[in-house]
Length: 336
Image (cartoon, rainbow, N blue to C red):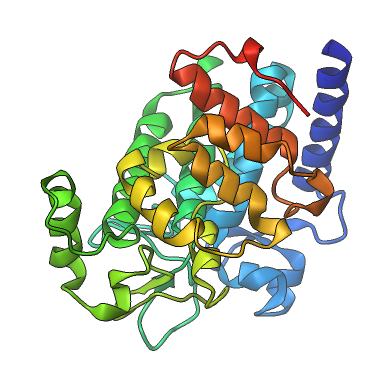
């Protein structure tokens, strides 16, 4: 209803404005030394706020804010006019399209595409921390959504008269991250099926026929010098998969192809004992190949039981968007 949308928009507006303007206990500040936006707690402790003060996973975390800002900006253009520069600073922190030499100009600067490795073709998430395996990244999907959120925000900016240059640059970063995830994270074991030949060749080319990877279908953590099936988050295989699925947005079905999910879901997710908190993600995973069956499964979900990054309504909306894309009349769907 209009009243529900209005109330939700107001709540989102207040939450974003409080964060952007520093009306929170752990406010965001500009770091003159490394040229970026960090949290006050992160500045005062290297491991505070997931290492935010040392630029760990900024493209993960700021992607959520950029996505929310894009949604609000689409609904309320005045937000862009009043607070656009604050949001821009978060976008520049992770995906600055200028200053290709990352030089300090008058003590105010952002480095060029902070997290992106142009040689590797994807991002790394460790920030300033040194690792024995070089830089690394675990959640390929959050990296994708970080650039997707930035891209959507730039589109909103462009629709109101801003330059298209940032938008085009963000399309490049997003495309690179998608291709990198599909190449280095999404795996299928060796198969003699001609239908799977392309994916089989890609797996063999990247990782050979290592038995450690044949039945996992997903990389957990990718470093410059090594690769693991597990991750810092969990050794549980299904959690490694779903960590590389979240958050659920429109880009999810672009990141996870039907060809990949047909194998991945059958051999990993469908075989796992999924905890209640993660069932919303597994239903969305299933929806990519069978949205009608996933719709039935979603009726058993309760938002209170799900991970705080997901709700039942979000799961239903995602499934409906997939069904609409197939030409299905969603008005015929029933809820229970």
